[in-house]
Image (cartoon, rainbow, N blue to C red; front, side, top):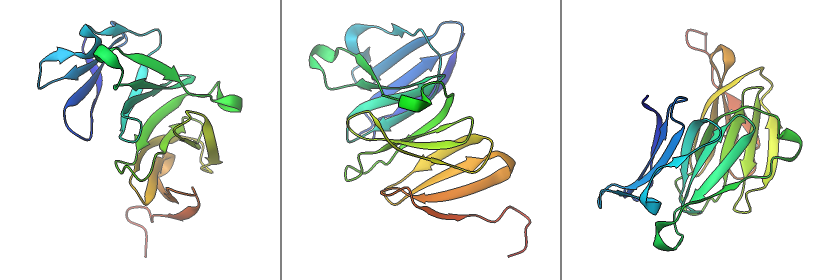
Length: 178
């Protein structure tokens, strides 16, 4: 038993914690008050492998095998309600990492798949765009207002424009000539 992932809201008042495969717990804490939203931890049916906070939606987003899901933190009485994203043709993918720009001007949340797709979800929670990373494995990503940076297999790091998902470049590998 233990925790596998943590995420803090941009305001710093909410902390989301995900339990290991053994207990499959999910809890959003108002840590200043010392209480979980909704009064208790939830039990999940599927394992979350990564978390991100969406300031535009005021929601935590979890990704995993065949899902991208948001948990709204603005419902009355601290009630928690998870809403699954519409994955369309990519519903069988393993989503391995998620990231949202921490800017309120960008309302996109990004996720990558183990097979090498970069996906963009808007406020409607529908996959609005996706691109092939031209790699056979996505590993990690981080988003800011201007860029989405993706780590792929083989230490390949690719940069994309956060607004358009246009390819911006690939960083040189460590030890390569400039």
